[in-house]
Amino acid sequence: MRSENIITGKTRVCGLIGYPVGHSMSPAMFNAAFRELGLDYVYVTFPVREGELGTAIAGMKALNVRGVNVTIPHKVAVVPLLDELSPLAQKIGAVNTVINDDGCLRGSNTDADGFLGPLLERGIDPQGRRVVVQGAGGAARAVSFILAERGAQLVLLNRKPERAIELAQVIFRAFQREVSALELNVSNLENVLGEADILVNTTSVGMAPNDGDSPVPAGLLRPGLVVYDIVYNPVRTRLLREAEAAGATVIGGLDMLVWQGALAFEQWTGREAPRQLMKNEAIKALPK
Image (cartoon, rainbow, N blue to C red; front, side, top):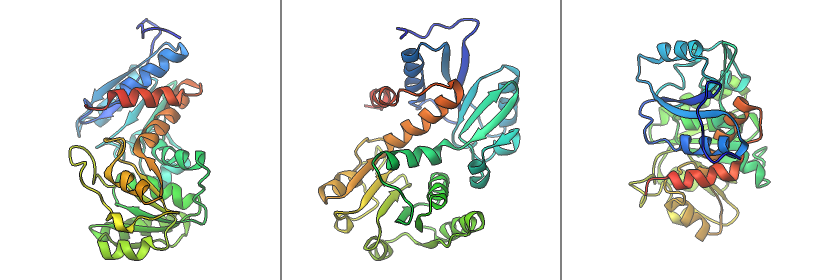
C-alpha cells in the first residue's frame, strides 16, 4: 500500500469526462483504490462540454490515457466515436466506461452491471421477478436493459408516459420481452406495487438538497418488497428510510455507484477492486 499517489513518467492516467464534473466523488474513490493496491495510476476529472467530445476522445488516444468514465451529457454521443462496444452497451446505446488498449477504444456500460451487483450479492435474482422502475431517462435505460436481460417482468412508470412507452419498445426490440409502460402517478403506483417484488427509483426525487421528498407515498411500502433507490446523496433517502420502517428490504444508490466504479477499475487495471474502501471514500467525499 502506498501512502500517496506519486506521479511518475510511467503513471497511467484515468479520468472522468462530462460537464460539469467538479462535484464528482470518483477521484476520491479511485485514487484511494490505486493507493491501496500500490498501482502507479492516477484519476482526474476532465470537464468536456458538448461539442468538444470528439476532440476529447481523439486526445485520449493521442495522450494514451488508459481509461475514462463517461457521464452526462456524453453517454450516448460517445458511442460512434469508439472502436468497439460490449454487447450490452451496444443494446443500451450508451457507454459509461472506456478502456484504451494500444489505441483501440472499447466501450462498456458498467451502470447496468453496477446496478445488478448489489442485488445479486444480497441473493436477489431479478429473473421472473415483477420489477417496477420509476423514470425513463439514461439511468432507467441501463437499469431496465440489465433487468430485461436477466428475465425480469418490467413495468416502467414515468411522468411523461410517452418516454416510458418509447423505452418499452426499445427493450422489446432488443430482448423480445413485453414491457408495461404507464404514467407515473399515485393511482398507477398503487395498482402495480401491490404485485411487485422490486421497486427501483431512477428519478432524482429525494436527492439533496430536496432530500425531504420521496417518489413513493409511504403507505404503499410493505414487507416483502425490495426498494432500490439509485440516489446516493443522501446515502439514506427518505424513500429508503420509509421503506425500511415498513419492513421492506432496502438498497441505496451508493452501492450502485461503488459497484459501477469497481467494474471500471477492474477493466483498467486487471485487479480486483477494494469495494469497501471505495465506498468509505465516497461517503467521506459526499457534500456535507
